[in-house]
Image (cartoon, rainbow, N blue to C red; front, side, top):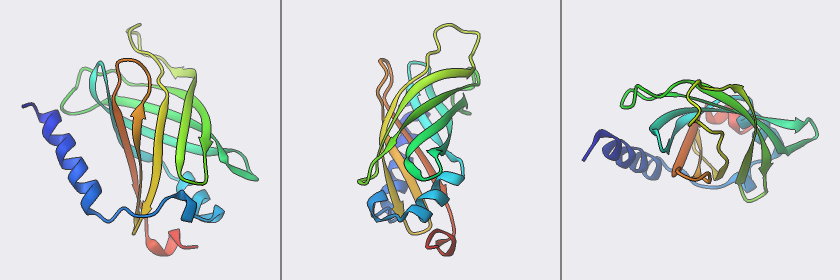
Length: 159
């Protein structure tokens, strides 16, 4: 078995053993704003293999934090160094149950390799003690799962 398999097993173990409980339903609007203010870091898997992901989220409108704009930034993982860097914009929604749906919009930095495509995401926001995670599926053909997370102080997140 390759390193990607063991990395995925390790990440799943960490996620399930670190006390991720609750959903965005329990997050008041000001806490949600705090979660949207910082970048999310993680990875996803598509035809090119394991790829690093930075997801930057922001409300489309100040008074409606559930309608989102996003920047999907990808780059090589140490276990898969041939992946080029790139980024694109997305738009979507986060509902009261924590379900996140993001759809591709337009390229910001498109790799020279024409086989790289923008993707769509469906996942769930889970908030725990000092940490939050979004995990789910990359719904574009040839892709699998993604997971991104944040760590924060409980004092800051409880404001």
